Amino acid sequence: MKTFRLMACALIALSGTAAHAQDWPARVVRIVVPFGAGSSPDILARVINDKLAARLGQPVIVENKPGAGGNSGTDLVAKAAPDGYTFLLSVNAPLVYNTVLYKRLPYDPFRDLAPVTLAATTPNVCAVSNSMGVDTVKGWLDALKRNPGQYNFASTGSGSIAHLGVELIKARTKSFAVHIPYASSGQAVTAIIAGDVHFACLPPVAIMPQAKAGRLKALAVTSAERFDLLPELPTLRESGIADIQAEPWFAYMAPQGTPPEVVQRMSREISAVLKDPETRQRLQGAYFNPVGGTPQELAKFMKEELARWKPVIERAGLKPEN
Image (cartoon, rainbow, N blue to C red):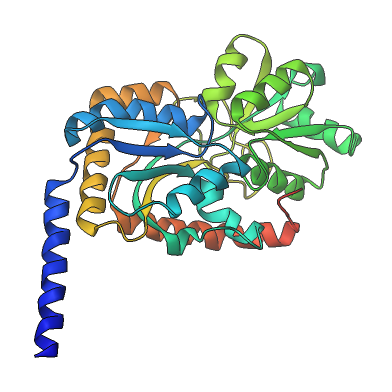
């Protein structure tokens, strides 16, 4: 009799979950972006949102929760109720790299978050302040080698791909520059223009408008191959730096325990929006490469990213305060 009651309770719970997933969404869906307004993930989320809301039949809102290099907002979602009404759109560092960088990360992205879909990728663009007086990657690197410690570089936070990418460049070229982290790519670009920092490798949506206006000089992309949307910029590999590939990526996640049917539905709807011609045009106009895909594909991708970057972080001895 006891076994029967337990089985009955389990069936009721399962049927309740199925009913919940079937009715979802019944109210506003929240997308937490752990960076400020105008940041790359914020722009991406807002481009996707309108058509995502139309497909879900409910409003979808963005909430910016910046802080601690993306850790604060990511932790907020990791600890949110897994009811299908809170999702995260985050990036490389809070989702993978910070598990290596931080001894006491307040969440475990592989345990506390459920993958939804890989939304987009983009290469970083390495750019220099006009005050450096260089026009090529060779000129930039020669300046760093001749004057170790004289130059500094901006990033979007310790452990970000903007930080790790430059650390990899420094290691490959045996050069040195001082790291200065900023809260967003917009702030970092402003610092380059003002001459407060000398260079950075940041998303093209932040760099290219200023480069086209002549306020700084774009030199190269950090992808393995030339970027179709910026064919005029060489890769760092073409410029003589071997084994360089450091690209930002953007992924939707949910609190662990969110009903699988809800996660799968959200994954399908976001992927469908990313295939929409108008959305793709808008995203490519902001230099994003739309991706999409299943939760399983994102989980596999995150594990591969951890395997690729963990040795780089450990070899360089990087810490959050670097």
